[in-house]
Image (cartoon, rainbow, N blue to C red; front, side):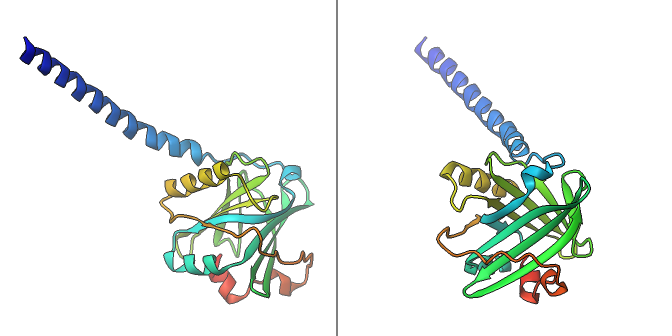
Length: 206
C-alpha cells in the first residue's frame, strides 16, 4: 500500500509540475501582449508639452554606449494644424552641447513617420499617467529604439520596472535609466531650418 501511495503522490506531483510549466509558457506571451498594447490615436491635448527622457533601449548594441553617455534628452509635442497635425521637437544634451531637431508630422492612428518616412514612431501603452512611450522603427537600418518620456524627472520604481519588462518583451537590452539630476537643454522654439536638422552623430543615435 505504501508503494502504491508513493506512486500516486509522485503522479500527482508530476501532473502539478507539468500544469505549472504549461501555465507559465502560456502566460508569458499574454503578459507581453498586454504590456505592449498599442494606443489608439492619442488625444492632442494630453499629448502636448515637454517631457524628459526617463529611460531608453536600442536594438543596435553599438548605440547603447552613446545612449549611456547622454546626460539628458527631451521630446515635445504641440498642435500646429487641424486634429492630427503636430510639431515634434527633440533635444539631446551631452556635457555642454545641446542638439535640437524639429519636425511637422501627421498622426495616423497611433503612429507617425518622419525623416523622409524612414522612421515610423508608434505610441505604446504605459501605466505612467504623465508619460509617453515611443517605439521608433528605423526601416533603413532595421532597428528599434524604445524611449520612455515623462513630465517628471524621476518615476516610481514600479513604473521603471514596467518599462524594463516592456523592453524585455521586445528582446531589447536592459534599458539605460537617465540621471534625473542632469540639466535639460534650454527650450528652443524655432522654425529655422538649422533647428530642423540633427547633427550626424545624433541622427545615427536616434
